[in-house]
Amino acid sequence: MKNLLKVVAVVLLLVFVSACKDGVQKQEEVVGKKPNIIFILTDDQRWDALGFAGNSIIKTPNMDELARTGLYFKNAFVTTPICAASRATILTGLYERTHDFNFGKPKLNNGYMYDSYPYLLKKAGYRTGLIGKFGVKVNEGIEDSIFDTSIKTFWPYLKMVDGKEKHLADINGDHAIDFIKSDKDKPFCLSLSFWSPHADDGAEEQYFWPKYADSLYMNNEIPTPGTADPAFFEALPEFMKHSMNRKRWYWRYDTPEKFQRMVKGYYRMISTVDSVVGRIRATLEEEGLADNTVIVFMGDNGYYLGERGFAGKWLMHEQSLRVPLMIYDPRQSESERGKTFEEMVLNLDIAPTILDLAGVEIPKSYQGESLTHFYDGDSKNWRSSAFFEHQREGETLLPKTECYRDDTWKYIRYEANPEFIELYNLKEDVNEVNNLAYEEKYKDLVDLYSKKCDSAVGKLLKQRRAN
Image 1 (spheres, helix red, strand yellow):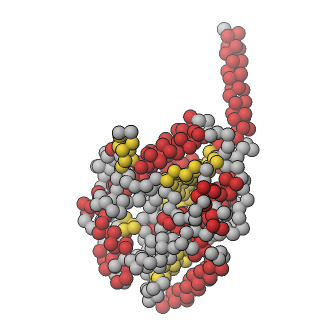
Image 2 (cartoon, one colour):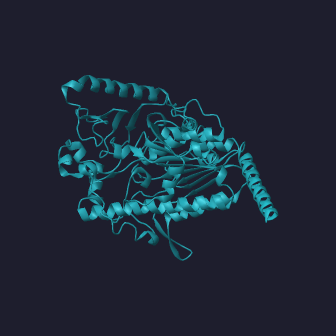
Image 3 (cartoon, rainbow, N blue to C red):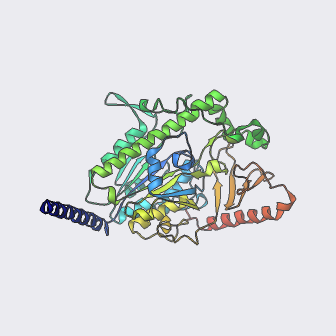
């Protein structure tokens, strides 16, 4: 019996040593290799449309897992809350005022695109891909110069594929999986850009999802936001009462029944994307790529769900500006992951982060910072304030607006309506309902933040390239 126990002990020891060697070898194989990078972008997903953010109704287990086991940025914002300008900012690392792209504007300057993260990664030997919504306009030849593979998809959300109905998010997922499997000889950077959960603005029902999501949220009651009380809307100035935000409110939230139906549709579309995220992660495991593939997940802008009597985005309140953002980097030890950060991070930070992850030099022209500073706690000098803007041309229902926000205060002004300004104490008034801008004791503070906006605008314009 003693000899048998010795034999068993030796066998177990050999198995343990072998497992350790395999683990070390696996880690050594990853160290020194260029990581694969998948940047996942959703359209119109606000920061709290995520289970990990505290939403007890929405079901996003795969997104939650990225946040729970990676780095989660609780206060992530876009500098311009509209898809076109935000996506240009993500690509170029520049503010709208500098890259000068939005709806109604000329195509993005070639010089900015030659500093974009996919161009520089391709130049550095990465296989680059775009799947889904590009969302920006570029000059002829630019798209080919930045992406090895570009598969742009479009509405409608439900399409017939091989005789079966398929949702656009699942179609994008299929393309993403094909891209991941297609070539393992080079590191890759895949920009996977979903249309979901953006509403189909031309359709009465607005939101569309696959049949497998039909049963989700059927038994839930979506709580109505406190600021959806008509009193908040009635207190607004006239130009905001007739904005696009109000026009689209009638499309989605003007009755309690429609509100329930629309928000559940919005949630189902996000849950559909979540299922695709799960498929992609399973593919990485199956292909032996999971240990060396960094996943960055973000929304392109926030979204009003009836707050203030509004729908859409475009304005400077938290619902419009804040988005989910997480980074899952399996190369980090488990003790370094699973962290939540309170600091203010921006879509400006995506391009420098992706380049930094790939070991590619970050252009000095970039206006954001790499989020890899948070890997080792080197964030003590991180920003505590930021400028925000929306400058869409040729749209009278979308007022041009500017904002300056720090850890305590948010100041908002409107270009064509300078008589109306907003000032909120974010620490005491998280829902931004008590406008302090017209109280005498805050006059100096209003003047200070107005000058901060002026200074930011001047600086960003100086950094714009000549066309």
